[in-house]
Length: 336
Image (tube, rainbow, N blue to C red; front, side):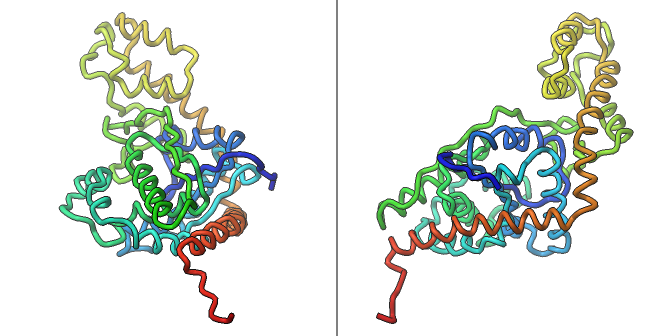
């Protein structure tokens, strides 16, 4: 692995949900790939976070971890440039989480707007359990165990970074300067909508997977919602309201300006627009498929990359944890 000197550390992670879709790619992974040459990147599959709401059935967790890692590698997350970890293989995350939980006021967690949105989506009035309520503390330990100074996130995740900053600030106030106060590295990616016009999600089955077969891609694109006011080809369209047009933009269609003009002037219909998008999408995904097939065949290689990355990460994590315990006067010496 190349030595990454004098680069700022960033950390980001995802809960293992299995195979990924284009929403994950354009919303996060594309940005991660671009950050690898500028920063010392640590990317984590956060399997403990998956337990906060899915603790009753863990049968698919191991497969989901491998599928997610394979997709990361297939789109360009490079273990020669970045450190890829499995959260539970770096137990220092858990110990720092325990220490942070002792100093974090419950009110900070109860006011978390992201938690409130989750509860609303799940139809719940309160957190599933302590782990669910306290997951921002575990997230803070994920970031601060590596002294990451930046965290690539979308705007909806900024409250988590604010809680992390508050925890770092509180620790430093109580015990001395140990942790940086990380900044959110906002991504420019828009919210990716599914084929039904709602947020793209596996649970809603409205996604286009990164390993989707071509005919399935075409079928899904044909069913996509478009501008509701453009019923006939001759109707003036509003591309800014159309999810199909937004994907043309994300896929860097060289005809984007022409499509927008013709749509607004009623010279371009939704059927043709979808057909062109289908072929663009198929060509885009075809670049990923060979890599995906390789890692599908060689799952041992995926596990080895995660294992080696986790070992490297532990060296950083152990040093940080020792420093934190030293600051808290928890490095007891009963032998002297």
